[in-house]
Length: 487
Image (cartoon, rainbow, N blue to C red; front, side):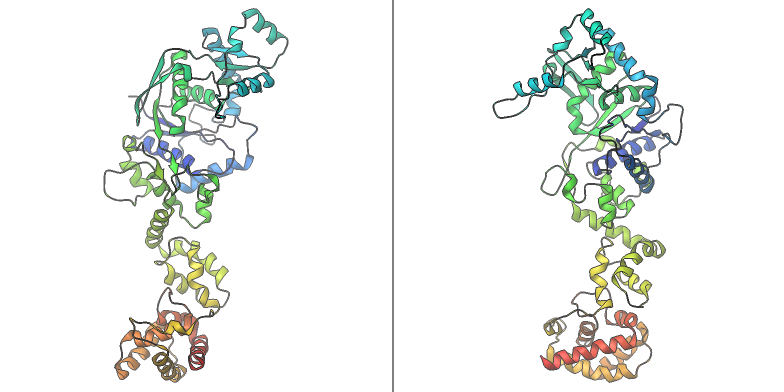
């Protein structure tokens, strides 16, 4: 088999959808697993939907996720240009389409928008469903009529000429051999009225000219694969290996929609997901490794990825699992990189002059996504309002009365104490605990409640009091005493 060449061919029309990233990732992994070539090609033939800033999104996403292309607009490998609008300047798409016309595999269509709309309306079923299929009206035009229309400058498109009887069979690496009735195949447009090739036609031409061996797509394109194959066969070109991936659904098993809140890479990054988490998680949306594990670096994925293990079943985007995975990546991060992500959130939440690095150390193993930090540390900036019922804890054997006693007895000791390091505070508390013959929880629960005002905190009383410092710790303990005395 020739050297594997795959391509990611995004259209710059907006954000990078999770499904687009999965396509790019699988194309990348197929190539890298076999020491092949991964190509980036920009498909900008849809000028109406073209968004200039989307180009930056594509490049930034590829760089951020580590999907480095071997060839592309910025890396010429001898198959360029790698941007379709630049490729069409040579007129090659139109020439290839005209070649199909000469072979009887395509034809000029001069139908007006009004006729097509009328056809569409008349093809609607009783239940309101459209049958979007052209009726081959212009296929019956004589050669003389076609030439006269062209000479008169009449607007036209070029359509593929598909048979109306018999069947077409194509092979997919995941779904196997699939046979469709030819009467179901629409005569899709190859060249649009503006002279641009359609996405489908340009794909076939460019994939052939660039020597692409494997094409990864979503299974929603299964129905168009026979039309692709007929184009390859009409030209006498080798058909690439198709790899159709399962649909990605949300937790309710509906197709993952843009409005879901986590359908794009930008959405996920904005929600505090790490790029490596996104890559790892997306890799598992439809593909299963042979080993019983779920955490993989990109390099490890390159080694183990086998596209034959892609599933036919829909892949569920489980946001809970994604957050768990992100939490595992955060735990494994070195502190320097963690601070790059965590400090902006901490600075936004805590305005007072505390040691923010120590706060970051407290939350590192206790969050799943970075925005989680805020609710875990907001008490440092300002003691929240809380109910004295929090001092009662069955397991710790605390209640309002004995909590008040502990705080009243600890207050003068803490007022005289100067070493507010973790070790210093622990030493003082343990001395008091031993003297009073109490369990740790009987003392530490009231202290932690008083200084945090929260039931759940990242770190215990020692860690919190070290960060707050002596003055603020004492202010909060005195307020706890006052609350308990007035309860």
